[in-house]
Length: 144
Image 1 (cartoon, helix red, strand yellow):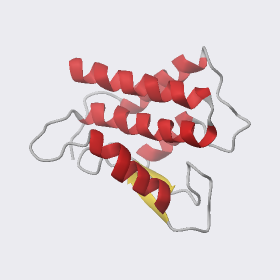
Image 2 (cartoon, helix red, strand yellow):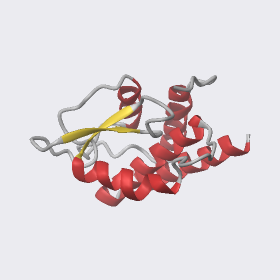
Image 3 (tube, rainbow, N blue to C red):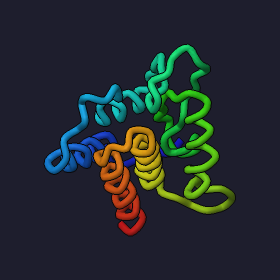
Image 4 (cartoon, rainbow, N blue to C red):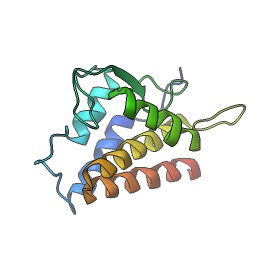
């Protein structure tokens, strides 16, 4: 497992706070606040429901935000949403073969995917902007 030289939680939380200066979190939705999700993912806390759709009583799985090879951070998802993130979103950026990717870049791309999926589910502009913000930050990590 690769150790990061920066505090990814602090960087991610700062991006959320920065966005919320322009667009408030839609508290009326039954979705945990992104900073809470980020902190719980780092602690690998398993929820009793899918954080994307809120379903409980269905098979739940732990999704590695940055890919299993990069970081241990996980988020609880139902099988449907886990499969969607793993088979549709992540193949675009997960380092297969000999490709080298910065774990921090993968971390931000993983969160971008999750927020994009939340945007598709809720239709709320907040999650679309958050997805964009994290994708741009991943690009910044690659260029740094």
